[in-house]
Image (cartoon, rainbow, N blue to C red):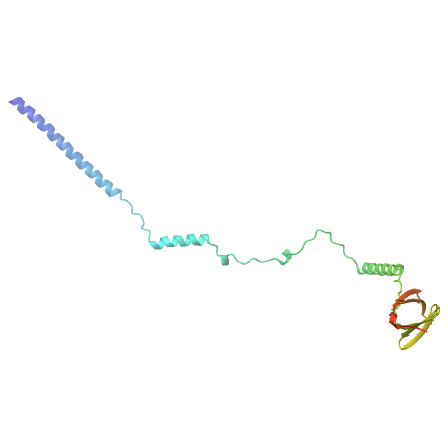
Length: 199
């Protein structure tokens, strides 16, 4: 009976100690949790409102687009030259003094005068015929031609002069051939056979 009591006491003592240890452990764990909760409190994130989101979007849009007014206006330097001016690669001619210009002009005028003197004058041409054919008369081998000019009438045979400037050369049914004596140039006057008469 004593042995059972001693064993029972021992068992109860161990169980009691185990319970005490368990309680102590539970208390210690709860203290640690409380300390952890007290010391390490989570920081709540900032709430982003709609206005802050819109502001950030507006800044993004401003950064994407370029404000032309803020660029300012370009100032052109007058010494920079004309923007669309034509450029030439030919070397610039040296400046010519007024005396040199006078000498060049004189030489040019002399050369032009010499060229005009050497050039052959244009060949003179006879004036156009002013005669009007009136008719002709035939008697045997003789032919007379009747012509009019400036209100005056002329009668001439072949080989005779008319008004001291023309000579009658030939006559046929279609034309009269005259020679302009100052230039020895032949000219032809067309006639009409209907005005021919015979003696």
